[in-house]
Image (tube, rainbow, N blue to C red; front, side, top):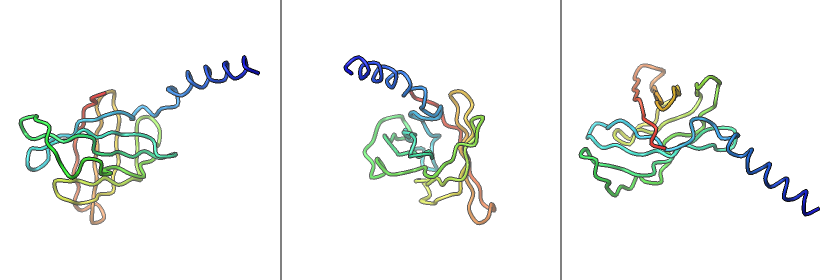
Length: 131
């Protein structure tokens, strides 16, 4: 029984990283309207993808305290295959607006875009993988 438990633990330990979605990790946003940017931790939330603001920086790159740290920025994003994600929402702290969102992963680059008012007003950024 001990041998079985050890084998199961090793197999699960090796398989767990393989189950991670390729978009998971820390991403650097582009600067917002005021020049500030953030690091967003993207992870799985059940079968969907979500992201939380992990750190914030001013325009010079100095880390700054912000009430936005720990806030959910991306939620309900659904993996659709081939690095494409859709069906979720994204919150833009610089404008305090929530957009219907989609994302496209290409290596260490993540194109994030969103629209409000039935697609009349849209914004987008390309984020860089930090880790």
